[in-house]
Picture 1 (spheres, helix red, strand yellow):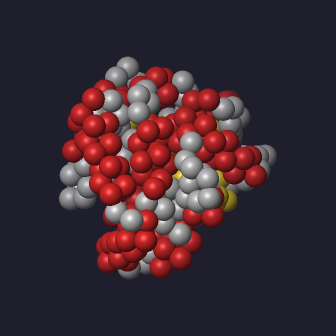
Picture 2 (tube, rainbow, N blue to C red):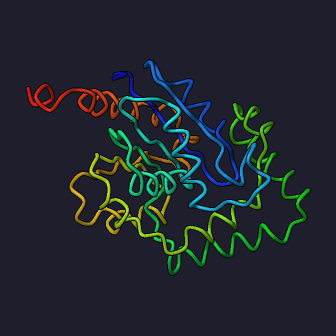
Length: 248
């Protein structure tokens, strides 16, 4: 048994696995880490995003990390993929740290996101690509490697369609391991969904990072990394011990 915790880190829509560069730079521990590109993104941008295929990709990446305690880490789209993975597949799961995944993709939330997706579709692909690259570069100075790997604006509409009707409470109810949900204090859609997502889930807790909106891991990488390390140290170490040792 490998006692070092493994981190499977799943990125948000439009971006790619290099989204996690800033968080990785803040991690002080010795981790085995995988940051795969999800379908429709980065090096897998040649095919559309599909949730089921994303779960397959994430599962294969988790298995490639080898035996030992696993912590699933996700933000936005990656957090929903992480929820689906943890609820559907058998893994040596020590827990999950998931940002921005408490919005109910039905009703108003779905309508707003579908409208945004239509606005994306209005722009020619070249203009959309250039606009995305300028916006990401201006907001996140460390993002050069992520931009170089490739952004894909079309993935946003595909992700919205795939997440429509996703049942977060049901997915959380299928996960036995502890889960930490993280939202920005200004991420109103996800804040409004916190009570809905956590209903009857004693193994789930939620924290907010002050002063930021959606995308907690890239907007506050140091704070997010601190939460992640504290979670991993608490849960991955106990997961790697026998039940007798953990109770001692």
